[in-house]
Image (cartoon, rainbow, N blue to C red; front, side, top):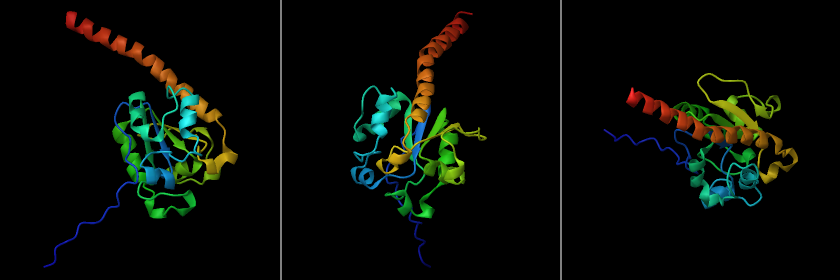
Length: 197
Protein backbone atom coordinates (compact mmCIF):
# COMPACT_ATOMS: atom_id res chain seq x y z
CA UNK A 1 0.00 0.00 0.00
CA UNK A 2 1.44 3.37 -1.06
CA UNK A 3 1.61 6.26 1.32
CA UNK A 4 -0.59 9.12 0.25
CA UNK A 5 1.40 12.27 -0.45
CA UNK A 6 -0.12 15.47 0.88
CA UNK A 7 -1.38 17.83 -1.78
CA UNK A 8 1.28 20.48 -2.39
CA UNK A 9 -0.20 23.90 -1.77
CA UNK A 10 1.99 26.70 -3.10
CA UNK A 11 3.06 29.15 -0.41
CA UNK A 12 1.76 32.71 -0.41
CA UNK A 13 4.09 35.14 -2.17
CA UNK A 14 3.38 37.76 0.52
CA UNK A 15 1.69 37.14 3.87
CA UNK A 16 -1.80 38.51 4.41
CA UNK A 17 -1.83 41.50 6.73
CA UNK A 18 -5.23 40.82 8.27
CA UNK A 19 -6.80 40.75 11.72
CA UNK A 20 -10.03 41.83 13.38
CA UNK A 21 -10.93 45.48 14.05
CA UNK A 22 -9.54 46.85 10.78
CA UNK A 23 -11.17 49.88 9.21
CA UNK A 24 -9.75 49.15 5.78
CA UNK A 25 -8.32 46.25 3.79
CA UNK A 26 -6.62 47.19 0.53
CA UNK A 27 -6.56 44.32 -1.95
CA UNK A 28 -4.28 44.22 -4.98
CA UNK A 29 -4.26 41.81 -7.88
CA UNK A 30 -0.97 40.07 -6.98
CA UNK A 31 2.51 40.94 -5.80
CA UNK A 32 4.68 42.45 -8.51
CA UNK A 33 8.09 40.99 -9.28
CA UNK A 34 9.94 43.57 -7.14
CA UNK A 35 7.56 43.10 -4.21
CA UNK A 36 7.94 39.32 -4.40
CA UNK A 37 11.73 39.61 -4.47
CA UNK A 38 11.81 41.99 -1.50
CA UNK A 39 9.06 40.31 0.50
CA UNK A 40 7.14 43.58 0.90
CA UNK A 41 3.93 44.99 -0.53
CA UNK A 42 4.16 47.68 -3.24
CA UNK A 43 7.98 47.69 -3.23
CA UNK A 44 8.51 48.86 -6.81
CA UNK A 45 9.78 52.47 -6.65
CA UNK A 46 7.41 53.38 -9.51
CA UNK A 47 4.33 52.38 -7.48
CA UNK A 48 2.41 55.30 -5.93
CA UNK A 49 0.92 53.24 -3.10
CA UNK A 50 3.04 54.47 -0.18
CA UNK A 51 2.97 58.05 -1.47
CA UNK A 52 -0.81 58.16 -1.77
CA UNK A 53 -1.31 56.73 1.70
CA UNK A 54 0.82 59.54 3.13
CA UNK A 55 -0.67 62.26 0.88
CA UNK A 56 -4.23 61.35 1.90
CA UNK A 57 -3.38 61.19 5.62
CA UNK A 58 -3.94 57.46 5.98
CA UNK A 59 -0.35 57.20 7.24
CA UNK A 60 1.44 59.96 9.20
CA UNK A 61 4.40 59.85 6.79
CA UNK A 62 5.52 57.91 3.76
CA UNK A 63 6.26 54.39 4.99
CA UNK A 64 8.95 52.23 3.41
CA UNK A 65 7.59 49.04 1.80
CA UNK A 66 9.29 46.88 4.45
CA UNK A 67 7.28 48.75 7.11
CA UNK A 68 4.01 47.32 5.80
CA UNK A 69 3.30 45.40 9.06
CA UNK A 70 2.98 48.80 10.81
CA UNK A 71 -0.24 49.49 8.92
CA UNK A 72 -2.34 47.34 11.23
CA UNK A 73 -1.70 49.82 14.06
CA UNK A 74 -3.50 52.35 11.85
CA UNK A 75 -6.42 50.00 11.17
CA UNK A 76 -5.26 49.07 7.66
CA UNK A 77 -4.74 45.56 6.28
CA UNK A 78 -3.34 44.25 2.99
CA UNK A 79 -3.94 41.25 0.77
CA UNK A 80 -4.13 40.22 -2.90
CA UNK A 81 -6.66 38.25 -4.95
CA UNK A 82 -3.83 36.08 -6.29
CA UNK A 83 -1.55 34.96 -3.46
CA UNK A 84 0.49 32.19 -5.11
CA UNK A 85 1.95 33.95 -8.18
CA UNK A 86 3.67 37.25 -8.85
CA UNK A 87 4.42 39.52 -11.77
CA UNK A 88 2.45 41.64 -14.21
CA UNK A 89 -1.29 41.06 -14.38
CA UNK A 90 -1.23 39.59 -17.89
CA UNK A 91 1.26 36.91 -16.78
CA UNK A 92 -0.71 35.64 -13.76
CA UNK A 93 -2.18 32.12 -14.02
CA UNK A 94 -5.97 31.86 -13.96
CA UNK A 95 -5.83 29.23 -11.21
CA UNK A 96 -3.94 31.66 -8.97
CA UNK A 97 -6.98 33.84 -8.36
CA UNK A 98 -8.85 32.72 -5.26
CA UNK A 99 -12.11 34.61 -4.87
CA UNK A 100 -13.42 32.17 -2.26
CA UNK A 101 -10.37 32.64 -0.05
CA UNK A 102 -10.70 36.43 -0.13
CA UNK A 103 -14.44 36.30 0.58
CA UNK A 104 -13.88 33.92 3.50
CA UNK A 105 -11.16 36.20 4.92
CA UNK A 106 -13.44 39.24 4.70
CA UNK A 107 -16.26 37.37 6.44
CA UNK A 108 -13.87 36.21 9.16
CA UNK A 109 -12.02 39.48 9.85
CA UNK A 110 -14.95 41.84 9.10
CA UNK A 111 -13.15 45.07 8.12
CA UNK A 112 -15.39 48.09 7.61
CA UNK A 113 -14.19 48.58 4.03
CA UNK A 114 -12.58 46.43 1.33
CA UNK A 115 -10.86 48.62 -1.28
CA UNK A 116 -9.50 47.12 -4.49
CA UNK A 117 -6.31 48.71 -5.77
CA UNK A 118 -7.30 48.35 -9.44
CA UNK A 119 -10.27 47.40 -11.55
CA UNK A 120 -8.48 44.14 -12.42
CA UNK A 121 -8.37 43.07 -8.78
CA UNK A 122 -12.06 43.92 -8.39
CA UNK A 123 -12.89 42.12 -11.64
CA UNK A 124 -11.21 38.90 -10.49
CA UNK A 125 -13.11 38.99 -7.21
CA UNK A 126 -16.50 40.01 -8.60
CA UNK A 127 -16.39 38.00 -11.83
CA UNK A 128 -17.34 41.11 -13.80
CA UNK A 129 -15.38 42.62 -16.75
CA UNK A 130 -13.31 45.67 -15.84
CA UNK A 131 -15.27 47.81 -18.32
CA UNK A 132 -18.41 47.35 -16.22
CA UNK A 133 -16.78 48.34 -12.93
CA UNK A 134 -16.78 52.01 -11.88
CA UNK A 135 -14.32 53.65 -9.53
CA UNK A 136 -15.75 54.42 -6.11
CA UNK A 137 -18.22 52.55 -3.89
CA UNK A 138 -20.06 49.49 -5.21
CA UNK A 139 -23.54 48.26 -4.24
CA UNK A 140 -23.57 46.26 -0.98
CA UNK A 141 -22.95 42.52 -1.16
CA UNK A 142 -24.39 40.07 1.39
CA UNK A 143 -22.07 39.15 4.29
CA UNK A 144 -19.22 41.32 2.98
CA UNK A 145 -17.89 44.70 4.07
CA UNK A 146 -18.50 47.82 2.01
CA UNK A 147 -16.49 47.67 -1.23
CA UNK A 148 -14.72 50.44 -3.15
CA UNK A 149 -12.70 50.28 -6.36
CA UNK A 150 -9.67 52.56 -6.65
CA UNK A 151 -7.37 53.42 -9.55
CA UNK A 152 -4.28 51.23 -9.57
CA UNK A 153 -1.19 52.73 -7.97
CA UNK A 154 1.06 50.70 -10.30
CA UNK A 155 3.38 52.71 -12.48
CA UNK A 156 2.15 50.60 -15.41
CA UNK A 157 -1.34 52.07 -14.95
CA UNK A 158 -0.29 55.74 -15.06
CA UNK A 159 -2.80 56.64 -17.80
CA UNK A 160 -5.71 55.69 -15.55
CA UNK A 161 -4.31 57.37 -12.44
CA UNK A 162 -6.71 59.65 -10.58
CA UNK A 163 -6.14 60.36 -6.88
CA UNK A 164 -9.74 61.54 -6.30
CA UNK A 165 -11.20 58.08 -5.40
CA UNK A 166 -8.26 57.52 -3.03
CA UNK A 167 -8.95 60.87 -1.35
CA UNK A 168 -12.64 60.04 -1.02
CA UNK A 169 -11.86 56.65 0.51
CA UNK A 170 -9.30 58.16 2.89
CA UNK A 171 -11.76 60.83 4.07
CA UNK A 172 -14.22 58.10 5.02
CA UNK A 173 -11.59 56.07 6.91
CA UNK A 174 -10.23 59.15 8.67
CA UNK A 175 -13.76 60.08 9.80
CA UNK A 176 -14.03 56.62 11.41
CA UNK A 177 -10.69 57.15 13.14
CA UNK A 178 -11.78 60.55 14.44
CA UNK A 179 -15.02 59.08 15.81
CA UNK A 180 -13.29 56.17 17.52
CA UNK A 181 -12.10 58.00 20.69
CA UNK A 182 -15.63 59.35 21.22
CA UNK A 183 -17.08 55.87 20.72
CA UNK A 184 -14.53 54.42 23.16
CA UNK A 185 -15.38 57.11 25.74
CA UNK A 186 -19.12 56.43 25.38
CA UNK A 187 -18.56 52.68 25.73
CA UNK A 188 -16.38 53.20 28.81
CA UNK A 189 -19.03 55.48 30.32
CA UNK A 190 -21.74 52.88 29.74
CA UNK A 191 -19.62 50.18 31.40
CA UNK A 192 -18.99 52.45 34.39
CA UNK A 193 -22.73 53.16 34.75
CA UNK A 194 -23.44 49.41 34.74
CA UNK A 195 -20.89 48.84 37.51
CA UNK A 196 -22.36 51.62 39.71
CA UNK A 197 -25.99 50.65 39.09
